[in-house]
Structure formats: C-alpha cells, structure tokens
Length: 443
Ligand SMILES: NC(=O)c1ccc[n+]([C@@H]2O[C@H](COP(=O)([O-])OP(=O)(O)OC[C@H]3O[C@@H](n4cnc5c(N)ncnc54)[C@H](OP(=O)(O)O)[C@@H]3O)[C@@H](O)[C@H]2O)c1
Image (cartoon, rainbow, N blue to C red; front, side, top):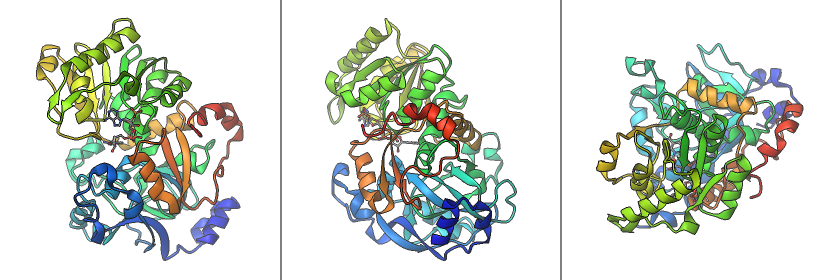
C-alpha cells in the first residue's frame, strides 16, 4: 500500500498499473454478529463509534466491468449513519439478497460490510471489458450500481430492477484504503480540488441535482421559489447552490444562526431559522397542528412578498411533510428523497388534490445526472461544502457528528491521503474559487 501511496504522491501515476495490488487493506466495517447491539435503544442514543470498526479485510477479486480504486479520501453520508445504527433494517439483508444474484455478486455477501458511498482516488486496476478508464486515472465515483440486464433501466438507469447504492447495498465501499466499483461509476476528479474536497460532493450533489434540477425530479426553472429544508446540510447545501445558479429563489430552512450565516455566504437571502420560530408541526406523536403549517406559510409569504413555493425540497419526512404539502403553491411540486424523521408520512390530501399539487419521489441519480452534477463542480460553478475532515480511524466520530446533526455541509474522511490539502493540479482555478470552496470550513 505504501508503494502505491508513494507513487501517487510522487505523481508517478503511469507506474500504478505495474505495482502489485495488496491482498489486504484497511476498511471501515460493521459486523454481522453485532446487528442486535443497539436493540431497545432510542435511535438518537445509538452510537456509530461502537458499531463502526476499522478492520484489515481481503481485497476482492476484480470482475468484468469493474475497477479497484486506491481511495485517497471519502465522506460521510447519512446512509452510513443508517448502516451503523442498523436502521431501518440491517444492511446485511441487502448483501445477502445481492449475493444470490450471481457468482460475482456472491463476493459481497460477507459477515462484514465495508461501508461508504463516496471516494476520490486513483484507479489501481480495471477488469475485462473496461476501456474508458485505466490504472493511474484520478477519479471520483458516484454510487449507482446497476446490472442493466433487464430492459427496465435502459431509459433511466435508476429504474434498473437491480439498482443498488454502492457501499450501502453493496460491499467494498469508499470508507477504506481500496474500493471496488463498477467502471461506469467513475468520473474525472476535479483538478482544482484536494482529495477530501473532491470526495465530498458525490452522493448528495448528484441526488440534489436529480431531485431539483433534472426532468426526472422537480425540473426547476429560473424564477422558481424553492423551499429547502436543511439548507446547510448535505443535500440542502447543494440544492441551495443549484437554486441560486439556476436563477431560482431559495428559501432556506435551518436550525441555528450559524447555519443561517452559511446560507447567506452561499448567496441566499430568504432564510428561516426553524428553531428560533419554534415550529411544532405535531402536537403529539399522532396529531398534527395545521395552525403551525399556516404559521410557516405566513412566514414564507412575508419573505417572498406573498408568494408560495413552486417547489418544496423534502427529506426530513414525517415531521415536516404535512407542512411541506400545505405550503407548496397551487400546482406546485413537493419532491422527496428521504424520511430522516420517519417514513410514515401524513398530510391533508385536500390541499394536494384541490390545489393540483404533485408529490415526486426521487432517489439518487443516474450516471448522466451524476456526471452533469460533477461537471458543475469541476467547472467551479458549484462548490464542495466540506466543513471538517477526520482520519479513517475516527470515522465513528464523524458519523456521530452527522447522526447528532452537529455538523455543517459535509464531513470528510482521509483514507490513504496522509494529510489534508493534497491532490490539487489546477492551482490557478483553485485560487479563483478559494473563498467559495472554504465557505463551510470551521463553522
Ligand atoms: N434517496 C437518496 O438518494 C438520498 C441521498 C442522500 C441523502 N438521502 C437522505 O436524505 C436525508 C438527509 O441527508 P443529508 O445528507 O442532507 O443529511 P444532513 O447533512 O444531516 O442534512 C439534513 C438536514 O436536514 C435538517 N433536518 C433534520 N431533521 C429535520 C427535521 N426533523 N425537521 C426539519 N429539518 C430537519 C437539518 O438541518 P437544520 O437542523 O439546519 O434544519 C439537517 O442538517 C437522510 O435521511 C439521507 O439518508 C437520501
């Protein structure tokens, strides 16, 4: 591993293909024999530091269409929080089901799960049938893993009936020194970014792009008002940038003055601090309070000069969904990709049908959408939202930060990279965007 790292740091990338691939590597895992460890505990008390381990694991055999990547840096996504607290189900169920598909997929069905759905690094080896990438290429990876053997996914690969999220529903993820991906997950690493910056947008940037911008999602247009929940969080920090870039008007919902300030730094003007406003959309576990929906709607109109949101960018789920459906304008769109606070949503359907609103489900992004989202990063039109970086050994703490919502934007993890700040090729472009790249740092 050291020889590979030395070659990367010495910029001897042509040599990578002739260096031996290590038989073992260090990866962040959960263990199948620990899935009951938090049984009976409340979600918020489940501690990822207890369930995430740093193990030496065997390097998987490389199959057709695949690539092994030396991972310089990765990032925490909420799916690693879900994996680490074994909610809503243990990810070993995904690996077991995947393992039944073919002898090749059987490799993934192990008593440990190497997690992580983002990476920036260098291609080590490519399998048979891979022609577009070669050892030594500097890459990032999106997390869509598809088989495409059925016709279903051929208009939109997210509709493949064997669609999986790499590092969540497959093994050998990015929070490790080596990762196994399909070659059609690879994209060029933006030259002006460090390894940890380049690794951080991937999953959330692609997801927010499909959800808000793509014709598969809300198909946002200039002038649209967009209510963005968690506007300084993983998804929201990209949704806010897409709204501003695309000539739309974001209304950013956050939970502290610090988070509000970050949104202002991104260029947003209309901001709601949900903590300061003290919204309580639920009176108790089973009863919502429509008066609180109205109070939110009134606040939005105050900010917009009387307009309601054309699009509501939803992901908190149960806690906010009733309000989201209520505040969307007549004919507006509520686009949802998640349910952090609970997946059994309740809303008043009269507001939906009488006002001709639409709810759109959105999940990750296809290769094309991910590529377009990464291109925006590479061109300096959208910027990473990295706030803090941890060592691979401290991934549990990094996941706890996200679980506790004590983070901003994205939390990075150094894998093979020995320190932050490495991997930049285009220093001139970096200098031009430095303030924007560092907006979320140290907040
Ligand atoms: N389907 C997909 O492809 C996909 C992709 C990415 C993520 N996701 C899911 O989307 C969710 C968010 O991911 P993320 O990366 O953006 O996470 P994140 O970095 O934790 O950001 C989410 C933000 O939402 C806000 N929030 C959390 N709970 C809330 C509540 N009850 N009411 C209102 N706002 C709340 C918080 O912001 P404030 O406290 O500032 O309001 C938080 O910072 C997760 O459940 C994740 O699994 C799905």
